Length: 204
Length: 103
Image 1 (cartoon, chains in turn red, brown):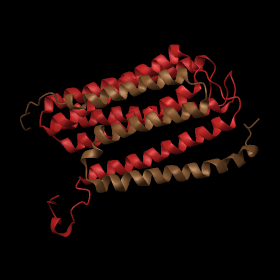
Image 2 (cartoon, helix red, strand yellow; image 1 turned 120 degrees about the vertical axis):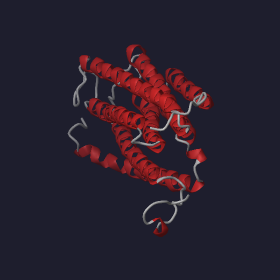
Image 3 (cartoon, chains in turn green, purple; image 1 turned 120 degrees about the horizontal axis):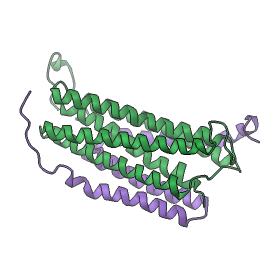
Image 4 (spheres, one colour; image 1 turned 180 degrees about the vertical axis):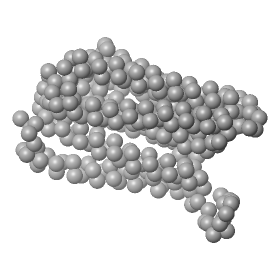
């Protein structure tokens, strides 16, 4: 990869042939994956060690809600891909439409997530108590899904900022791509949260 | 601001992976209701999640199109750290007897 600008003669080309912002985002994603991995391992330990771990998730409303959430989040990844490719092709108008579609889907996902939380809170689930069994169920459920929800909300804000600045011309397609990497990671984490947190705790 | 260049249907090439990811999500729910053994269910669900995750990383995050050195730098390191966590995970059972929520 060619290196341009001040001091370029002193700099080596990237061994990965990607811009530094993209490599930084990859390193952040790997560290964040380890964070989620630690939380999910901790949850696994607590679930295995607790003989009275509750299984509260009924098909309606919880699993149905989760399936809709999965559809919304995977679709938002698709619109994000559209935004990245349109931005790289120089089609700012289309990239903007895809970015705002991604934001809308992210907001819908967050709304469905909060609805799921309120449903469980109405049933008596708190951080350290619930009506069914091990009191740590609420702590692990709200910690893991809460951290994921925080990532979704942060992603929505980041995409909104990038969409505005990309439309004005102060950010490039590379910035859209780096933000897209983050958004796909949020989708990726959800693919592990659903089976481990929801589907392993079905109410039969 | 530079003039926008119109682009074609940019998401069409991603649709196969998109539909496979949705199919995996539906299959997970179906299997979860069919399987009664928790251990079997955990293994199957994790295998499906890893498949879905790999598709997302390779095609949505375009790692398949990057230099192999990037893949070899990131992914083995991540797997190593996760496996090391799993090694110390079983040791943490000893702490169970010191925790107030154990009983």
